[in-house]
Amino acid sequence: MLVELTNGLTAMGHQVVIVMPIHGDVSYEIHSALHRTDHTVLRESDFPFSDVIVSNFYTTVPVSEAASQSGKGLHVRLSLCYEPLFLPENHVSFPSYNTTPRLIVLSKWQRDIIALNHGITASMVPVGISTIFRNQHIRHKLQEPMNITAILRKVENGFSWHREQDYLIQQLDIVKQNLPHVTVNFISPPDEFYTSESLQQLKASGKYRFFTPLNDEELNYHYNGADIFVSSSIFDSGSLPGLEAMRCGAALATVYSGGNMEYARHEQNCLLSFRYENRLAGDVIRLVQDHVLRVRLASQGEADSNSWTWANSVRKLEQTILNFLA
Image (cartoon, rainbow, N blue to C red):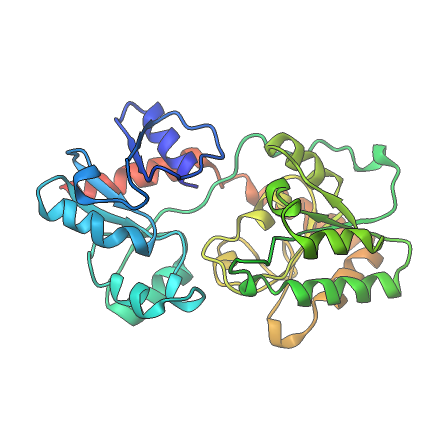
């Protein structure tokens, strides 16, 4: 999302500088200026003089505020996730939300949590979908069994508990036991798959097919091959993959994660359950067996996804920042 927003602002004529520590990774094509520091952590002196300084993670808030206090720009926080509820060091991330009232969030759910905990009413900039993602209408051409697809991330040395991946695998195993003819696919980022023993063991079991797309074009193809896309995450501010899969014409079975309530409407454009209901496998089986329901939900989901564009996100971000400056 940071790449889409910064690239979009740059395309609109704004001067955007991304400040990054010396060992920071760049995994996407960026069109903004990139300023790498000489140190492994950001310092106040690393920030150029600007109209606005945007922090995007709790660890960047103190130094961004320090730069702002020294006259280098107005501090605005772009919260891509509410860190205190699912990451370590919540004793640090929680009070960081009391640093600036100029706050941007991704969803009403995230806005409500922060309002309850900190008394700040944030502005909202929603997620978007790249124009690369679209329905190619190739499912019937593939002549494959019913494809059920989900994203599986690396668990080693990371924070993935909120994705409920053990539950996801368990539920898809139930689907496979009841419907042996279906194919269960997992999509994993290549760098995560090839450095994850647990993901490689799952592939070696022979029960699942794994895809490791190198870019959005390949990811779009795999979304297009999915008849049903499944999401088990219970905590997301935006929950982008389900929305992307909708755009590509897949029927969505998902667990409530907070942020996905921006687009997910049970029985209208997806099947949605709360985690305690333990209904994910049943919803997937229902979609497999009910062709009319699957086609109806997939069609409505694709139509509903059309309003979610990065251009819209960039426009809202620009207007929000102009309002802060005013």
